[in-house]
Amino acid sequence: MDQLLLKMSEAKAYIESKLTVKPDIGLILGSGLGVMAEEIESPIKIKYSEIPHFPVSTVEGHEGQFVVGKLNGKNVIAMQGRFHYYEGYTMQEVTFPVRVLKALGVKHLILTNAAGGTNESFSGGTLMLITDQINIMGVNPLIGKNESELGPRFPDASSIYSPEFNAQILDEAKALNIDLKQGVYFYFTGPAYETPAEVRLAKMLGGDAVGMSTAPEALVAAHMGMKVTGISCITNMAAGIQKTALNHQEVVEVANRVQSTFIKLVNRIIEIA
Image 1 (cartoon, rainbow, N blue to C red):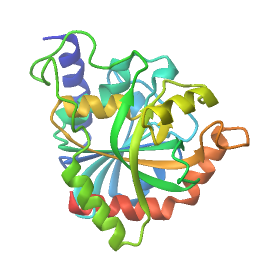
Image 2 (image 1 turned 120 degrees about the horizontal axis):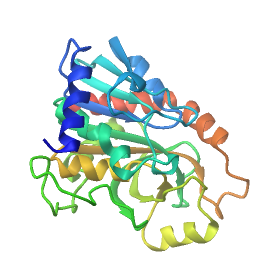
Image 3 (image 1 turned 90 degrees about the vertical axis):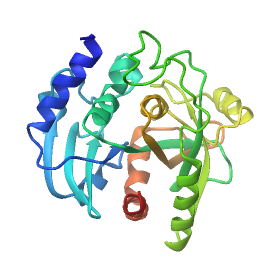
Image 4 (image 1 turned 60 degrees about the horizontal axis):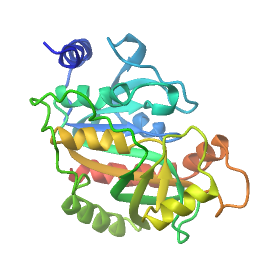
């Protein structure tokens, strides 16, 4: 068996040994957004450090554990904390948890993140539904040997984020009186926040928000045929637009401020998923 498939199998077996339900929906919760996992009923918590072949979270605001249980009547598995390329992990390690979620039976992956706004109609606290993504950083999690049982060598990336389901989400947000924006997520590797010139580049190429996660995970999920939904919490305006210095504390504080709206929206997404 190939090393990737073997590692997936061993991680899956360990997680399944702790579970009483089979998850259908996966959640990856970004900086300051891990509170969503506290909504899960009868939670089972599994530390990443206990799981074979798993990386560990090193970023403030990332708990580093799975939380599994019921949410709005659905079986969910939430990642409180994710992994980033800038932490020194390979792209394959960053996206390994997504592979394992698929192996566990997850059909729909909901990705959340804290991002900087490049669309000047946004402001700190805006929620943005991701419609597409841009990655021109020269790193791609699908580089290397392709396992055909996971997905095709040359996957179609024309609709990573389901346009049909996104339309449903926008309708539901309107019904909830949530001002949900939509836009394109531009991936930078980090860990430095983007320069004003890089932000101008992202804007020129059609990016509405910039961030250091999500795009690799979304691509790998789509590669395996999972439905993908992405929500960005715009915690600040990007460099050159925001006049004050950027810092991670602000990211977490703004994410905390919009928690109740974020939870309401994600709960409804799970309900209609």
